[in-house]
Amino acid sequence: MTTTTPALAMPSAGGRFQATTVERCDLRPDDVRIDIKFAGICHSDIHTVRDEWGKATYPLTPGHEIAGVVSEVGPEVTKFKVGDRVGVGCMVDSCGECSQCRAGHENFCEKKTVFTYGDTDVDGTMTQGGYSQQVVVTERFVVRIPDGLDLDVAAPLLCAGITLYTPLKRWLEHAGSDAKVAIVGMGGLGHMGVKLASAMGADVTVLSQGLSKEEDGRRFGARDYRATSDATTFEELRGTFDVIISTISADLDLSQYLSLLKPFGTFVTVGLPPNPQQLPFGALINGDKTIAGSNIGGIALTQEMLDFCAEHGITAEIETIGADEVDEAYDRVVKSDVRYRFVIDTATIQPAS
Image 1 (cartoon, rainbow, N blue to C red):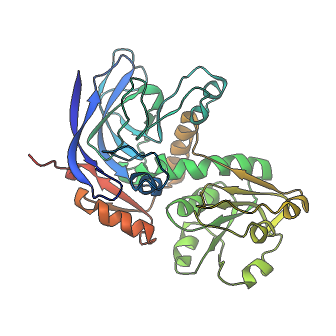
Image 2 (image 1 turned 180 degrees about the horizontal axis):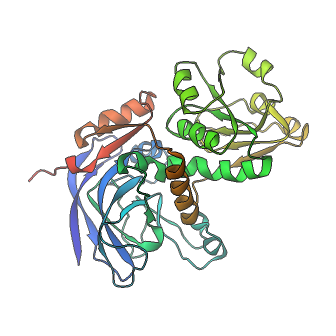
Image 3 (image 1 turned 180 degrees about the vertical axis):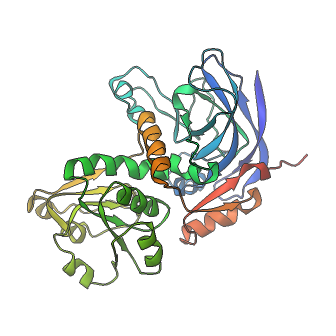
């Protein structure tokens, strides 16, 4: 048996969102049913529904930044009760038994991580995401949203927040909490990186194409803000940073950015450029520098991130929209015309009768 819930679905790669319904499974013993209140829009949603990464299956309901309230729990659920404020991020299941799962890296499950939408679930059906009013998830993949965080501004933390928290925690522990950190890009991911790195005690510089968001960057905690379109930026900042985190999905001159690192510094990318990048081995060897990647984070770390954000008053900067504004919002995200994350009020999803 299944239930249905109002949702937004993309019918095809070139289509527009339609109000419809999606099926949710009945509760299994360890499942939690969540009434979704807000769903964040991630740039990866756009890539996926427009089939820019390939293999998209339609109709598709995206969304992996989910915030809501527990409405029902299975008989074996121990961590949550009806009325709890909770969230769901990029994953909804994994084997729970392999070495990666046991280490808290469910995102790298050796058997299969089940992603929140557009993936094959354990029962063989396709997962449908958070642009809907209800979801059913095993309790292992549900996180608690602390009372200090409103649901709307917490939703983007389930992807954007953990995407930046994971590499910052790892590499600042390596470099020291007073490290000099550069955040490349000042969008939905970048603004979270500035807030988190500053709260962790780092000396933060934003490297952005221009200076239009400088006031915001400094308000979020950056000490310095530089334009990468200005050639003198790379000359003046040579050898400055312990860690650089790139949030942009565009081609980069890695030699330029590696020159900004101190010896033993690390360049981390969470953005995925569309083309293969040239790897300058000489720039790595000269200074014992490292290039690394980072991809979201496990469930325990996601809960840690939410607790950290509540403790330090960190939230996403959002623009709340209705269901009929999602297509326009996608176009605006592509144009970088949002400060800094769109969040859908799911109560506005009304399928045609």
